[in-house]
Length: 95
Image (cartoon, rainbow, N blue to C red):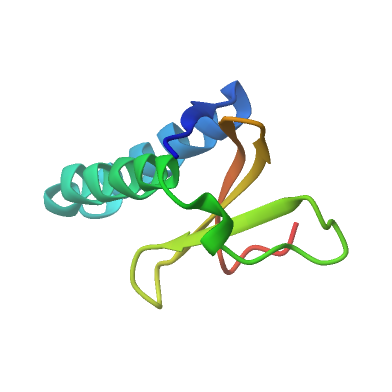
C-alpha cells in the first residue's frame, strides 16, 4: 500500500530552520543533508508502520534519519492512507 505523505507547517519550518543552520556551519553539507532528509520523509510512503511508536503516545511513530551523531527524529502519525509528519527535531533535543 502506498501512503500519501503530508508535512505539517511546523515540521516544514523545523526542517528549513535546521537546513539554514547547517548552511552557516557547513555549506558544502547542507544540500546533501537536506536531500537525504527529504528522501527519508518520502520513504514513509511505503511501510510506515515499520517505525517504532513513541511511548506513551501510542499513535505517534518516529523515524531516525541521518548519522548517529547528527540524527533527526521525524515524528508522524498514520491516518488511513496518509502519513502526517508533525515534527522534525534533532535527536539530542529533549523538548
